[in-house]
Amino acid sequence: MVHPAVLNSAVVGIPHEEWGEAVHAEVVLRAGSEVTVDALLAHVKERIGSFKAPKSIVFVDQLPTSVVGKVLRREVREKYWTGRNRSIS
Image (tube, rainbow, N blue to C red):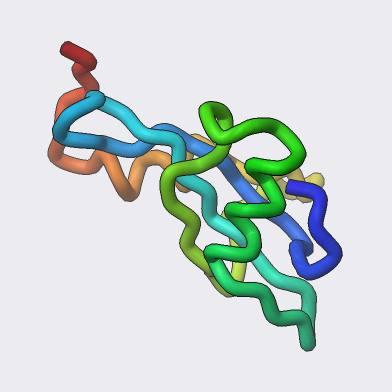
């Protein structure tokens, strides 16, 4: 997500009762920056379109990263899928 308030983000699929999976983003804001979920969603929808935009956004203090600083999306995804089977019907 390219937004002046966003320092880092991870976009993953999380469980959704109706669709099987839904696009979800975890976002780390820059120090001293503020933005609402609605404003950030509107920004993303304007840039990439509504159908590609995350259905939910959560602000977090930090994202899990590798020793070289790459976001470990697998770890972000695992917390939502723990104890659940991945199945899209």
